[in-house]
Every structure is written in structure tokens, then in C-alpha cells.
Length: 128
Image (spheres, rainbow, N blue to C red):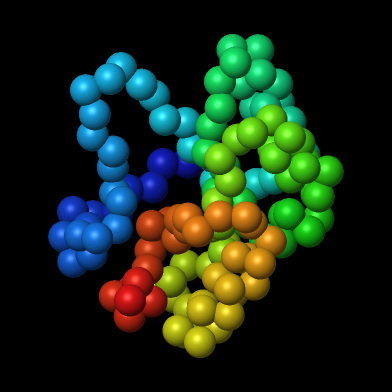
């Protein structure tokens, strides 16, 4: 398991982004990044199905192409799907043009307007 946290000062620079969801209900939001991959995603989907739970999957476009049957499984189980770039690029270490093209390429594969930047790393210009 990998935990990545975006520093507070970065979050404050981009307040229009969704960094956390506050609520009064006792709910847990499960999110999974980087899939779909055969070693993990089907097992996670099975567990979620057992408990009649759904989760958010931020998918890497390259993995969707490699494992379309697993992506279809996610869709058929009505999980929330969103983009996580095409090649899992960090915005901090990518040029803007290549980053934008990579994000756009992934967006064509995922039926969602939501996006999570890998590692939570995105520049202000990329954000805008």
C-alpha cells in the first residue's frame, strides 16, 4: 500500500480542487489508483461485491488498454471511474505540453470529468 499526501501549502495554492470531503454522515470513501491491474483489481472488486460496496477507481490509461476486461468489470459493477493520466506522470517532473497530451489521451478512455494527478503532484499552470 502506498500513501501520498499533498502538502497543505500546495492545497492552499489551489483551493478550487477537491482535497477532502467533509461530512456528518458516517461514510467511508474508498479510492484506488493506478489500475486496472490483474494482480489486485479483481480481488478488490470481489471484496467490494461481497459487502455490496462501491469504490472510486482512478485508472491509468495504459492499464485500461492492457487490461480492458478488468476495466469492463469495474464498469459493470457500477464503480466510480476517473482518470489518473495515461502513463502515471508526475506533473512536477513533466513538461506542460507532454503532461496535457497525456491527460487528454487518458480522458478519452475514461467516461468521467474527474481526474486525480499521480502523487498529487500538479503545477499551478497544469491545474489552470
